[in-house]
Image (cartoon, rainbow, N blue to C red):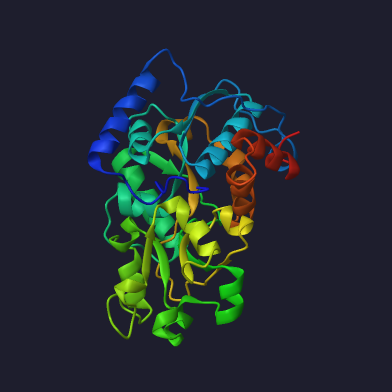
Length: 335
């Protein structure tokens, strides 16, 4: 997630999603076992959340199977247990489609979701809403009406698409925003991207059009300027200078590890993907304390925080549960 699997903004092929759903359905229905959730450290609530009680609550917490979502899922589990809830760990579900279906069907009570994913993928809307608060409110209203899911207020972090440069390119080109790419010679407009990104509605062609350097235009961006990679390989290719601009995700820990510089999306082309804890309506109504518990934590989840936490897992090899607990302890939420 951080993006070993970019499921936060897209659903996979229907056949793959259906297979994943069957697998997860078996996991969730059999013997009450989780999805290889593993050990989660436990502590006592402290600081801003001390005294919040979920005694008597029984809550299942899910996540998708990319590290950022797992880290966030473990945070919720740690906090819920510290507040006295009986928690079932269903983190690390294979596939966005399967995780979402389990949530909608009530097998999962709580899971972190992204506003852009909810709006564009789950609710099937054609256009993103540029204002973060407006998009959150729109997806919250619609998902509650259609699926009885309650979106708690979102975090500042926005895990969306971006383009980044390695240190040599950053110094040589001296640009800071996507708009400035149009000022460069055509031969400098080289991009490392994943194949799906070249075909997405919110992907490369629209971005290049928005910034005045349309794809396959001799004066814009010739198709020969594109280098196509698997998602995980783009970071390394960008760091090695195989292109000037590599497709990245804004909270991916490899940005820090490889010293990449992210260009500002000054035309606000890319959709917003703020993260929010989403609850089944019944759970939200029965346990309003959950919002009280999660609000101060969510408010501190910035891009910078998630870059660091994701790097600790993706780059340093730490366990998501340990990273989640350490951060909650450092921030004074648990002891």
